[in-house]
Image (cartoon, rainbow, N blue to C red; front, top):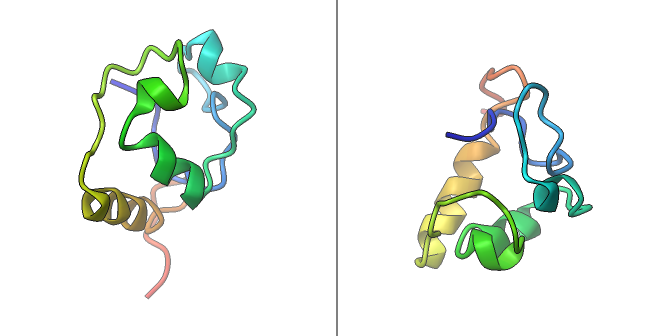
Amino acid sequence: VGPVLNGVVGRKAGTYPSYSYSDANKNSGITWTEANLAAYLPAPMKFIPGTKMTFVGLPMPQDVADVIAYLKTFDSQGNKVGP
């Protein structure tokens, strides 16, 4: 279980309210750009050493691209954006 991902693209890591992030995530200085998500999703524990995220990652580049495209379809309130 993790933080709400609505509006994650463009959000600073470790900042979603009411979620208990690891110090590694809170102090990473990362903003979740498409490029950072593309680097994170294949290997979260390598991208942010010390994260408590137990997800092993998505090894297939197309899966990573598809997840990012999906995440971009929701604003921070969970409303669909775009066409």
